[in-house]
Length: 108
Image 1 (tube, rainbow, N blue to C red):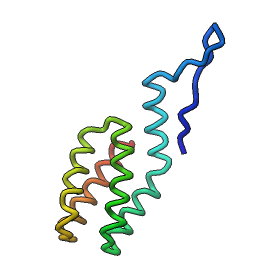
Image 2: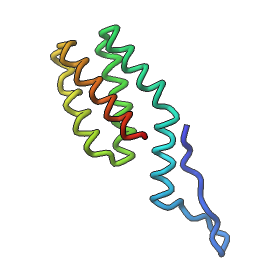
Image 3: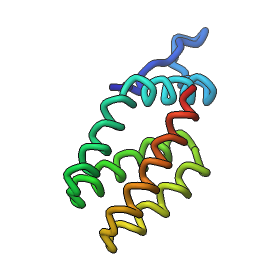
């Protein structure tokens, strides 16, 4: 789990917040380290056709992508979320797996 308390000490002894670049790098690293488990839980929800589990997992991924500012992936995720009420599992599975592939590619 990523903890947002890493900071540097300034000359005056005050703690300075980490730079945006450092924070972004830490957030991407946190997603990379958790990605296999996240992906598996989304795939499990698809196999089980468990709509509630899928919604929760997509919401969790949405939060991570929002923190990272991954707008293209967020837009794609939103399309998948909009498909959830229809529960058309063939379409939902295809779009969700496409999203997972794109997230995976962004982590390389």
